[in-house]
Length: 165
Image (cartoon, one colour):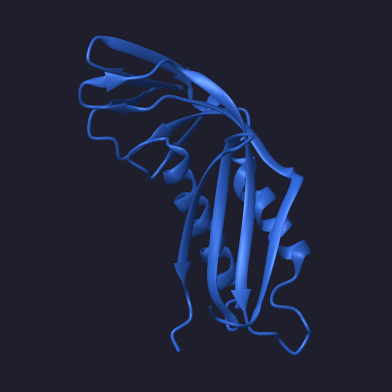
């Protein structure tokens, strides 16, 4: 086991409510929703500030990322079985003979293939990584993990090493 520092941020405010459905060739589950809970774990070296990373910064960035998902229907923009088309102010989503029409303002079209908790965790990880990189806040970070829970006892985790040393 590697020794070092890590921080873990879970907070009742790091959540979002969204609708989704899983679809792949031959299967589509019904449209339904979850109250998702997000957690972040960051492993790294202590910066001169005495932090691995400021808890407040992580909470602020996660809230910014999830605000675009809250009270939306998540549409996997890279799906191999959905036909997605913008028509005026609406989004048309076709799966076989099933047809959904959503107001554009009610959807979040994400660069994922499925709207699973696993792919949402990777999406949020990527958005958080990019935001931290833009702030030049990755220099002491070794790895980062994001968890997305659909409910108590049911979560998915995406983690990746960041350090280049």
